[in-house]
Length: 388
Image 1 (tube, rainbow, N blue to C red):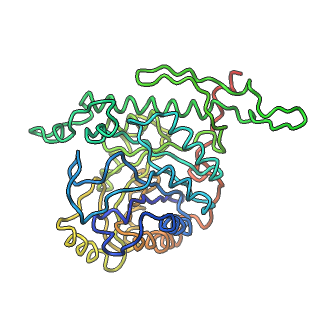
Image 2 (spheres, helix red, strand yellow):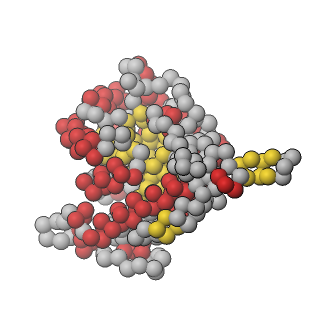
Image 3 (cartoon, rainbow, N blue to C red):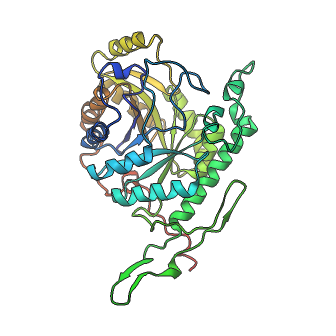
């Protein structure tokens, strides 16, 4: 069985000092096109593109005054659409928040990406719990996240009513998007010049969604896309986000720090869903001097790198050993976060994939034209067509 591999792209890499190792114009389409082209040459399943509604910051909620780290980013959905024409086989999975944004806008943006990529779009659905981000919009007031995180003895954020509401809102947002993706039947667009009919109006459907957070009539303004429903993914660290992923996503990224922990997480997620694809996240520094490179970046940043995901330093062969061990624990794929790009991305796309192919654990060519096909997910039938 071959592994699934993806990379998570974020600025100059996942180390805050990565931009100082190989300075590059991260605010150019050429830069991002080069990264995605490298990932595609390695035949990776997809790339994800990070996004948020506030500037990057060292505090958990609010801006800082640091000038030695990357600040600012492109809109991930717009960037993915710009990159799509330069790619042929790799999936494109931008992050779009379910908080403060309208699900109608997200749905048509991801559907458009699926059209322009020929069926290779996905969506990383993410909540935005920060009070500092809510102030950009002025429609809601959120409790300071720092106050929750700094309570004596710590806090289980999943037990906080505010956080639970954000995940409930996220579940409704994904449901709205999926209904909108289905609101055009596959053959609703006729384009019959002889009769003058462009669409069959009977095959466009109002979704009439009325929930706690949204009331959306529909239909979408975008025809049903090549995948029917683009792939929905989510990052999860604990029970509540596992539940969200199980109910609302096709694929979940989890963050174990050992094979034993991976096995326990897989068991917990499988109690919730037998169909959800389970990928593990790893921050990776690759090469013979990987530990030294990371140490130099830590020194430049003034602190040792910490992450929600496990941090790997070593060679491609050593990383392959870890991935195959975690696969035996039930992990189906991996989303690797390159410590610094382009170097660590190249090590993944060239060295790691070659190592895995030598072990009969990775593809030699793209075997499907869509992201769903690459991941082994069926194309879903439109729900409204079934009852029309």
